[in-house]
Image 1 (cartoon, rainbow, N blue to C red):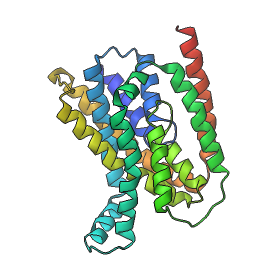
Image 2 (cartoon, one colour):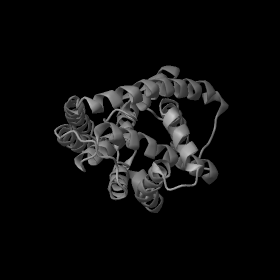
Image 3 (spheres, one colour):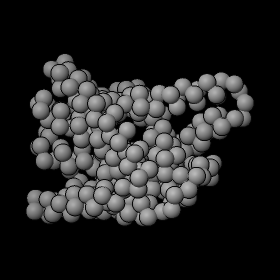
Image 4 (tube, rainbow, N blue to C red):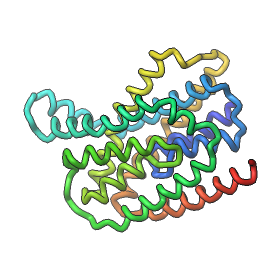
Length: 265
């Protein structure tokens, strides 16, 4: 993989992991446009590295929240912190179960399936538009909400469905405070990312070529820095109800993707 390609894909991952425009969909589009001919194992390793970078950027942005949650949970009382962690754990169940059970089926959806990405981006746009019109509240995520948001996260495994867009929109449409919805959305994915990384490493499916070390490192740094910026920016945008702009963007990119797939058949 070329250095420039690694930087571009790293920035795409870092931005789109948090901005509600689908990181998986944009990575597929990026690979198609850049003509990524990596064998599946090499492409998987690069994707894992980029996801690890964005998980770390989430931890950095929410370091105070995470520290407070751990400190509160260690009191071993049914307080707000332990309840929040329990909600995160509940929200992980649908994605973990569906991802593990249908891993091969989901894997087949990736790999230059640009037309699917286009249609799913348009669905993401609809979710964002509806969420942006929801009334502001002070409500926090409930246990029932956590399960529903977890299913939204599972559906977002489809390329083109934004994970952050689906989970934040679902949470807001359930009547939750927009800032609390964004916080829950970003924190709920961190355990899943590390779990998926551990599974990929233990499975032996990852192959490492020392010749790709520079590209992997630069891609990691690009994704980490872009992730720090995007995560912080997204929290402010959700609070100010600016998701409609991303809805418009998703429609435009979705239509371009469908057109690209049509003319390249």
